[in-house]
Amino acid sequence: MSVTVYVPNDSAAIGVGANATAQAISRIAAERGIDLRLIRNGSRGLFWLEPFVEVVTDEGRIGYGPVEAQDVPSLFDAGFLKGGAHRLRLGPPESIPYLARQERLTFSRVGIIDPLSIADYEAHGGGRSLRAALRAQPADLVEEITKSGLRGRGGAAFPAGIKWKTVLQARADQKFVVCNADEGDSGTFSDRMILEGDPFVLIEGMVIAGLAVGATEGYIYLRSEYPHALGILTAALRNAEAAGYLGTNLMGSDRRFHLHIRRGAGAYICGEETAMLESLEGKRGMVRPKPPIPALSGLWGRPTVIHNVMTLATVPWIVDHGSAKYAEFGAGRSRGTLPFQLAGNIRRGGLVEMAFGVTLRELLYDFGGGSASGRPIRAVQVGGPLGAYLPESRFDTPLDYEAFAAAGGMVGHGGIVAFDDTVDMARMARYAMEFCAIESCGKCTPCRIGSTRGVEVIDRVIEGRQRTENLALLRDLCDTLSNASLCAMGGLTPAPVLSALNHFPEDFQRPPAPAPAGRASRTIRRH
Picture 1 (cartoon, rainbow, N blue to C red):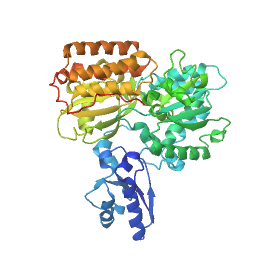
Picture 2 (tube, helix red, strand yellow):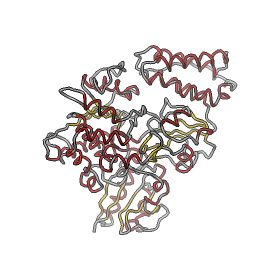
Picture 3 (cartoon, rainbow, N blue to C red):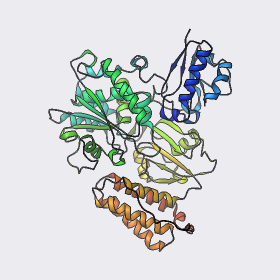
Picture 4 (tube, rainbow, N blue to C red):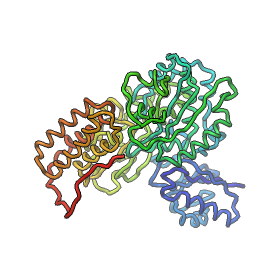
């Protein structure tokens, strides 16, 4: 009888040797005459245990990890195909505390199914939402999303139902659904994990959005740095069309929806929805002034629903389980769950899906296990490179959009990057300002010129030159960026800089380090 073994085909797992582990398992099984079925699943998000191997036994799935290629012979010798004892044996994955404490809704299938198998997807609840949506009235679908409290998971947290209602009510010969999969924030990987571990849930979510607003065409704007995700997503689209999830006769109905993939331009600014639209249309990715809003005049001037991967991937769960059930999760006006991503100097990095309201301290210590270095965590940046740096005194703030904003932070896409007490926050402030200078689209003066001047001012502070005057100038410059930039790129760049100044002022008063002989002047590289 064939034995089924799972080895992740996720980029993070591959980066630490999952392909070599899979090859070793297949080779040794063949050498020993064992009938083995190897499935390359997505990662469960326990990155410190990758490559995480699972085997289906009479007692259910048993996990082993981290399994390197050289560990495979001893696993076979220990009888791991029957769940045998081994130093890498972890038991049922669901019993691992990191997973057991989570509230996985959007990620309920990731790491469990074969990402490219429609049959496996449907065996775990997939497809039910699309069938229900085909029977529903568009206005009822929009109302369901509105009542759920779902807000955009890309950073701005705008209510999804309002976007959908606006597009539904707009009159046009063509409407679009666009997924912004240009996941460029530091420390974020949840979009990629969906694309590589459960792509059909994104496809289903986009089709439902199309049915709700009257759109028949969709585009996925995929980050250029995700070639592995591109391969999986391309195959998933073929399989979805063959199964009736896409095309001219959705599930045998007279409804249609076509979905296309477009690769990103390798620019951070294209994470902003209007810059992404410009890039999709074949132009340089530059921010458009608003109004008009994309819901009324988006892709090629047509009404367009724009969400990121995580927002659209959450739609099927809401349609399947109901808005009231989804709204039971969360805190305040932040309903549902968010996949938080732990990165940086953290012992147990990975993905943690929890309801809004969990605190940073819980994520950093109960899940993350503290710093990887064993030193105290001094600062955490939440929400990507434009997010504030928060000190330990803010770690007990609930992670919901309003409460976190009141504490000076930004939940954003849920990326959390930890730093221990060796970090120099003045240099982190410089990094944030330089990031803006490099990635600015150049359309507005405050962002284009202000960020460049900001790097120069911070350099003078670090070098100890007229610190009092330059710190005052830096705050004044941040005020201009915040209030005069065209989009969030320039408008949010001051957040990490000012948070470093406010919470870690001592780092801006350190004695300057001696310059190495022959040091070249600092320059800012541009794309």
